[in-house]
Amino acid sequence: MMRNAVNGLERLLEVEIPRCSLILVTGAEGTLKSGLVFSMISNHLAANNEHGLYVTLEQSKESHLQNMSSLGIKKKDELHVFDYRDMRREWADRELDMIKMTDEVIDFYKDKYGNLTVFALDSLNALYSISEEAYLRKEMYDFFSSLRDKELTSFLILEAPPLMVPGPFHDYYRPEHFLADGTIELGMIEGKGVVKRYIQILKMRATRHAMEKHQITIDENGINILGPIY
View 1 (cartoon, one colour):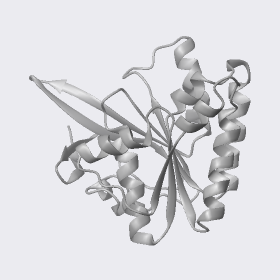
View 2: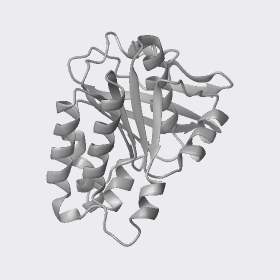
View 3: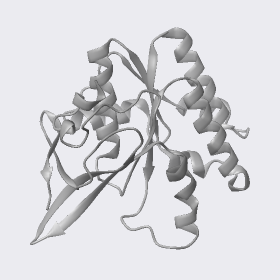
């Protein structure tokens, strides 16, 4: 189950994340967002004989898998990784509707693997950068609704600064936090010359969970969640 997919995750989740939930995973650069999501869903799928899809917009499949391997995170056969490199080459002279194409890619994998239950997008920032801002809020609402209709447990990675300050940047991200069923924040805390990474569940509907920041580490065996930082 998802609660046991990463060593120590049961420290934060008292019960399982409901199936078909839509979870935002946010944080600054270098806070292990991709590693956490990749590890969680890969281990979950292998333990439950299900299939999942990880779509990367920012890296090639090969580069992403190399990065995961360097963190001690191994891809299980049940997790399928897709990038848009070939499509971008083929459609270089045309404007791509990436949200529509992502929907179609999900449908392809659902048809190929009848028990496709988990989806991850890395990242929403990349999707925003190639979408028209005027229609972005409606497109995101429709996209989130589509993921729920497909009965997928979805993890959407969103890179954000450590502190969300008022202004256009803050407003830009607010709709996704409102629409999502859960928000997991990863960050860094510096004190006494030591920098520690942390994980905190800010919101998780229909799920009892810890509210404290917990330390998150990585070693040759992958990601570990330790006790509360404070």
